[in-house]
Structure formats: C-alpha cells, structure tokens
Length: 326
Image (cartoon, rainbow, N blue to C red; front, side, top):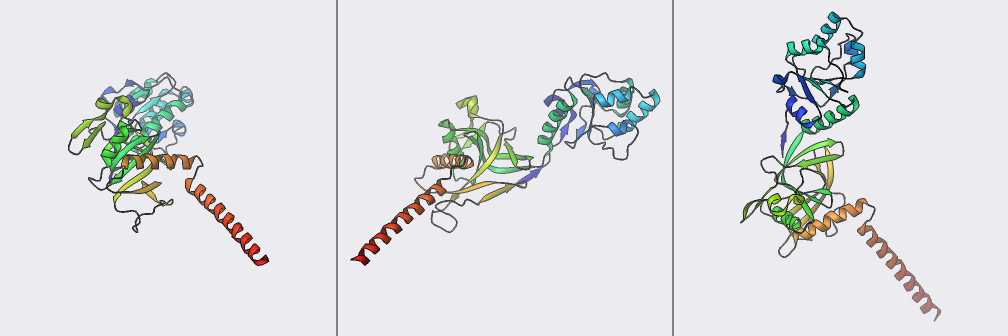
C-alpha cells in the first residue's frame, strides 16, 4: 500500500463548491493544505494570538456587521494582518457586501476573494466536506472495488487469481457496479468510514487477461459504474484448500482488515478449480448485509443444533427410564 497526500488549489475549491470569484482571479493557484475553516471573529477585534493563517477565512454576517463599526485605518490594518502569505482565500457568505479595505488587503497579498449566496453554515459544511475528502490521508490498494447491493466490496488477492474476472461476472449479471480495478484509492471520511474511488487514468476501465482493456461504461452502460463507494467488507481471494490451517469452513467472524486506522470486516475465500468465485463473493456480500440487519445464519444453526441435542437427550433419558422400570 502506498500512502499519498493530495494538494488542493483555490480553483479546485471554486469548481467543486458553490463559490464565485469576486477578486484575485489570477491567484487561484494558491494551495490549501488543511480542511479546517476559520471564522475570524476574535481577529476582527485585533486579537491574533491564535490566528490560523493557513486556513480559508470565512466572513459571515457577524464579522461583516462588526467591521462596519470600525474605522477605515483600523479595519485595513486588521485585514492586512489576516492576509498572511500562506492564507489561501477569503470567502464572504450570504452575498454580503465586500469592503474596500478587504479588497485592498487581499490584492496586496495576492489572495483571492470568493463569495456565495449560501449562509455561513451551509458554505462551511460544503467546503469542509470537499476539503476533508481531498486532503484526508490516502492509500492506494491493489485490488478491485465494486458496489454490491449498495455497499462497497473490496476484492483483494494475489495477481492472476481472478479478482477482475469475478467482478466482471457480477457486473454482467447486474449484481454489481464497478468502482475501481487494479488500483483503489482510499481515504478516510470519518473515524468509521472509508471511501474508495478509482484513479482518473483508470476510471471505468478493467484489464481482463487475454482480452485486454475494456471500458465498462461504454460496454455495459452508465448503470454499471460508480464514481466512489463506502467500503464495508474485504473479500480476500487466496490459493488453498478448505480444511487447511489458514481456512475455516464456517468463516472467521472476528477477522478484520485495517486501512488508515479503520477496521473493516474481512473474509478469506479459497479459490479452487470448479468453484464459482463470483457467486461466492455475491453470497458473502449478502451474508454481511443480512448480518448487519440482525440475521445470523451461524447463530440460527447453533440454536437448531442445541435444540436437537436437547430433544435427543430427553429421548435418551426417557428410554433409560423405561429400561430401568422393566
């Protein structure tokens, strides 16, 4: 697995959120390195002890209303302090008027000013969601990610074991949609959720041995692909036989795979001649989903076995009693 840190420019932010450029169009290549957004309320009063200059600075109704009570020189001085060389951009919410002092300070520091009709809370949520996804630590995993019954299934295994072929069969049956083949880029959305997506170069593509590269969207239609998926379970295909030390006929319910500090359910599936791997993957995905809904086939089997054992014990006890009476 290779760890990767992506960079985001102000232009990326504008293109992916509901922001418009007011000034500084020439400076949209400025880098954003943190998903945190700053609301500079204390800074408007001149208190800069804990100012975070690397964050996007969001000015809403509170900050704008306060600035209207300030003198020109005082306001210009505050904005100049806020316009740090590493500050990515100023964002003004709710279509509020933009003061000449802010425009002057931003132009001097070559910082773009952006605006939106959204409220501060709305644009804050939009920017945090986008930046959080783009700037989160990432890992690239060798495997295939498909969406099966609405959940992301990460298929891993040795090269040539049949990961792509199994995924393709499920796509052909209409049971799965392709997210990524060969390389899966994964980032952590929160403490319990992993998002997987393809690299731009390999989007919608699959490499089928003996056939070559195919465009899944072109061949099977737009419904056969997804741009991303939340990874819920890892199905690892392995050469081996059921009954060997590394395999359990009933599965290991406690087996997990950890990616970026998040643990997901892991199922090891032995690949043997004559076994339909695609059907096994589909069954494993359905089992995981039904287990989360409270249905546990293994627990049901154990309850039935215990009931049968109890019934047999009663029959044996009754027969022993009858024999003793005779």
